[in-house]
Length: 84
Image 1: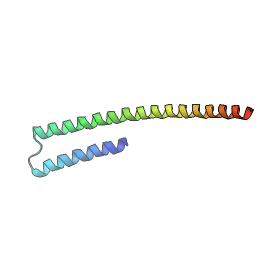
Image 2: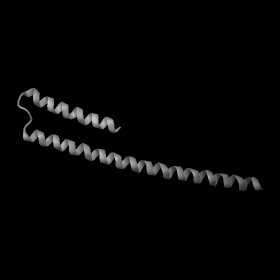
Image 3: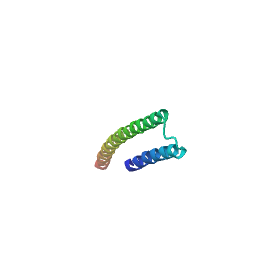
């Protein structure tokens, strides 16, 4: 996933710069600012993704613990039912 994002950013940068060079004038200050803004946004989004993936892992651990508790409770209820 991280490789995909890095490749995407690199391709976006290359495409952006190729468009500028193809025109012969090169990038102006506004275009460079837009590129810097895009890079900053990509970095922020990557950070958000990492944070959300961490939260997802924590939630999956909580779900696993709850599932284990449910299984244990089910075993206890089955044992109690079989005692009669």
